Image (cartoon, rainbow, N blue to C red; front, side):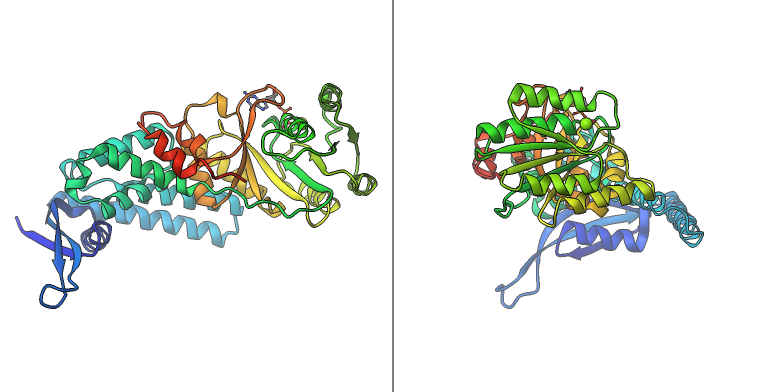
Length: 392
Ligand SMILES: Nc1nc2c(ncn2[C@@H]2O[C@H](COP(=O)(O)OP(=O)(O)O)[C@@H](O)[C@H]2O)c(=O)[nH]1
Ligand SMILES: [Mg+2]
């Protein structure tokens, strides 16, 4: 058997070099930190050296995997040339990316990866993080921790939690305009109307981080049976007025009529904007809300990763400035939400976690997601210190 050695500046870089050259045939035996370059011992750079050997059937397997990926790529390209629906292609690309990410994050042989990393990867998978997100985190851990440091599992776990927390983006504070028009879009049944009612109550009472002020709700969801009664019921309980409008023109007029109001909350119809008519209709509604309207997309935390990605993309034309994650109380696994937000680079503004109006809503904060992760043993004071002050 032939033993080979490869060096580079990080574990990830070396592994990528080895994989690019030998594919799955390379079986990693060991890795160690080395110092290279420099002058008389000065300015030497720390790097990583990996020792590995080549396995015969792994060579064949590696080639087969490569051939499979090439085949998959060809299939995708065929699709593109046939001008099939772009959403379909996007989701195929994504699952291909996940397949590649998964095989890249897997060590060449079971003993090649550190037990701490194996355990963390398992926890990430249990929390529904996507293969892409997991492989990004593991690569970073390999690059930033030496083998000895990896033995300190608590420290590695804590670092991984902080990296996850750091990917959570919060939208910047909105520009002060009057009226502030806030529009909620999203699929049916995710909790848009309930969220509008919660926000209306918080704002009219001046709690939960929203300044006190005059509020009006406007609904254009007059199609669904019971929709108007639902929002009127909330309006009555909270003493926040509501207007029901039918068209984009009515909406524009109503907003103009109440321009002295501090906050206007617009509840929309919950249909997926898949077809062109719906897209145009929704665009008219958003145009009627004025150029400084803030659009937020509501998605339920219980939505599967791929479905959530599809929803975020479908609503992309409406240029929402952030996401409201609803129904956090219905799941203990939020890796899907965090992966999708990171992958699409979207900010999260609010989190809702129950049906009670107005209690079950809070401004989004990385800590909230981190404390929801299963299996991890977070150092809460440290995380609080890091994220406690972060709010919109
Ligand atoms: N468990 C839970 N249920 C919620 C939450 N938000 C809304 N709901 C419920 O989800 C259902 C649909 O809510 P609704 O506001 O009508 O959704 P819309 O169609 O998007 O307007 C209702 O039964 C709500 O009480 C939440 O954060 N957690
Ligand atoms: Mg509704």
